[in-house]
Structures are given as structure tokens and as C-alpha cells.
Length: 335
Image (cartoon, rainbow, N blue to C red; front, side, top):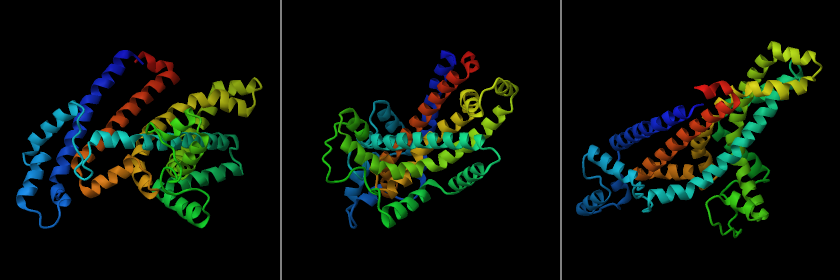
């Protein structure tokens, strides 16, 4: 992949972000409901409401509000949350590490499970393990992540309480974190008891996020592996005496990875979006939970900041996926 192509993708990111900002900004202001009325008590004086509208810049036209906000964003100021009375950038930066840790635990789980199931299904082609794997992937795809979360809460949190189902860390544990990345920090600093407690809280929400993605990876990768295994060069390798397992892992897997990588890269952003309901169900303190509160309170500055955050994650993820394509397929480096 040429540097010119990467530069072009980076330049395209700016109008993409601008388009997202315009759509979200306008939609939030044309839907019914007044955020100032929601934050003021019943019987508030009209002059107090007018003063609040002036403070939050809601007393001018939509166009003027947008360009004022856009200028603030260009300076790194996303405004002040109407409901929480804190700077939006501080709220997002404070909650984002928790969501990223959740997603970065769910993603390896999904990839490892999908890879193992796809390899096993192809290795046991035409035998009963393949039928079991196909049935499991079909079930996992049919059940959305939030329903998996509810099932986990019921089965492993209530009926058979083996893992915590609420929060990020037990209240009695004094972690005293210096950064928002609790798990990474606890591992680096050698506080493994805290890391173990964090992982216990992450397992169920991460598994709920990972299962549908793992099923999708299994189906895509299995199909690609079967196609590659029928190629002439693979048959030639088999004739040379290599075992089926060795051919599958050493030869076929590398050439079958690109379609699965496409799905994994795209789904990473959906995992971040999927945390909204998962975090709410498990009372997990990330940007997903923050987003639900912002929508309920119709907190316009906070919603706008969160949407832009999701857009940046989406753009960066797609760029990283493109770069990984180039590493796996040398022909793409010439583009």
C-alpha cells in the first residue's frame, strides 16, 4: 500500500467527520424536546430558562450554533455537558479507556474462538464435530449480544453466581488507578490480584460481545478455508506428504485470512457501538453507559462528542485494517 493512498484516506477522514457532525447536529435539534426544560425544575422562571439557553448557546439559529460549536471543536473544546455540568472532552476521555479495555478483551476472545472453530470444522469436514460447530455458530448468530448478556446475568450471575455481573471492580478493592486503563495498569505494575478481579468483571460482558462476532468469523473463515483447500497448489502440498492439519494451518490459513480480517476490522467498530447496551446491562462504567444517560437526558453536547468519538474510532480502525491487508497481500502494496 503506497503512502499516497494512506494520505488520501487520511484526507478523506476530514469530510467524513464533518458530514457526521452536520447530520448529528441537525437531527438532535429538530427532534422534539428541550434539554433546558429537562434540566430545570417545574415552575422555573422564564428569565432563568432564557439565561440557561444563552449559556449553552441554544438561543441562536441552528446554523450559527453549528459553526460556533465547530470552531470550539477545532480548538479541542467539545462544550459542557448539560446534565453532568462537566466538560465533554473530560467525560469522554475518562470513560473511553473502560470501553476500549472491554472491546480489546472481547476481540481476542472472538478471534480465537472463531479461528479455532473454523479450523476444527474444516479439519473434521463431513463428520459430527462439523455439525456441532455449524449448529453453535447458527445459534450464536441468531442471538444478539444484549440477549447473550441477559442470559449470562441470569445463569452465571443469579442462578449459578460464579462471576460478578455489575461494575468494573468490587467496591472493597482499593485500586487507586493513575490512568483509565485499569487492567493494563494493574498488569504493568504487578498488581495481579486487582488484574484478576478486573478480568472477572470483564469476562461476561466481553463474552456477550464476542459470541456473535466469533460465529461470523467462523462462517467466513470456514468458507474461505474450504475454497483454498480445493486449490491446485494445496493439493500439490498434500501430495508431498504434509498432514491435513499442517496444510490447513501452515498453507491454507494465511491465504484465507483476508475475508475474515475484513469482517473483524469492520466488526471492531460495531463492538464499540454494541457496548452501549452491554455496559448498561452490566452497569459497566464506559462510554456506552454514558451515551444512554446522555440520550435519556437529551444532553446535546455530550451526544455530539460521543458520536464524533465513535466516528474517529471507525475511521482509524478502517485505516488499520487497510494497512493489515497490505501486510497479508503484497499485491495491495502497489496500490
